[in-house]
Length: 223
Image (cartoon, rainbow, N blue to C red; front, top):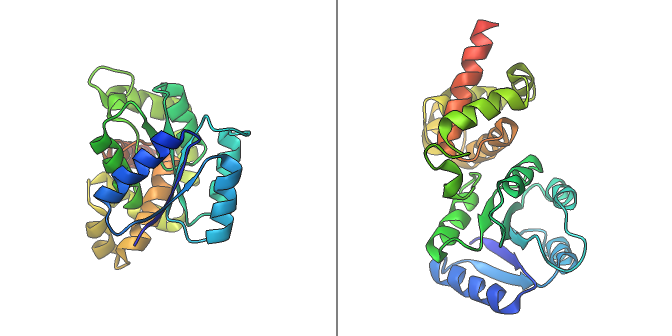
């Protein structure tokens, strides 16, 4: 049974989101917070939260650095930013901070619920508009950003031994279940390694993960 914290200072939206998630995830235990400080107290007191949905514009000092610190302090908990913004820069900052995704309040209820389920499954989520054909999030644009953001060799050096085992299987587009079976590890463990790998690669979905993994392997074979 997943435990989820919805942190947003707008009471009507917070309660509406909680109601929507409860209807879609009947077995979920969902609690609320109206500020970042209250959210952090809730995380500290609980210690077993699976997911925190947190608004960037709550009272108090909310920054990506502070959220990064929270993620590092509570590695078991996934952090999904929810914001009225649809700014690409905010999405990229969110991923750079090692958070598990970004969802816009402008998205539909179904998309937000899907994002929550996606992150709970161990993946990293970003809004679909980042992947529009020909747009700033297209595959070719992503490939260019992937190679220019940091030396590919440096990205490979950042991977753990197990992430390097996962890499070629991810490049083949295998699911977490298939990877777990191939490596003889649990699916839950696979999700942890795949999520960490996605963060290092700076990818936004499984398609980009496969593209980045293939490019990374090609670069390494050429070295």
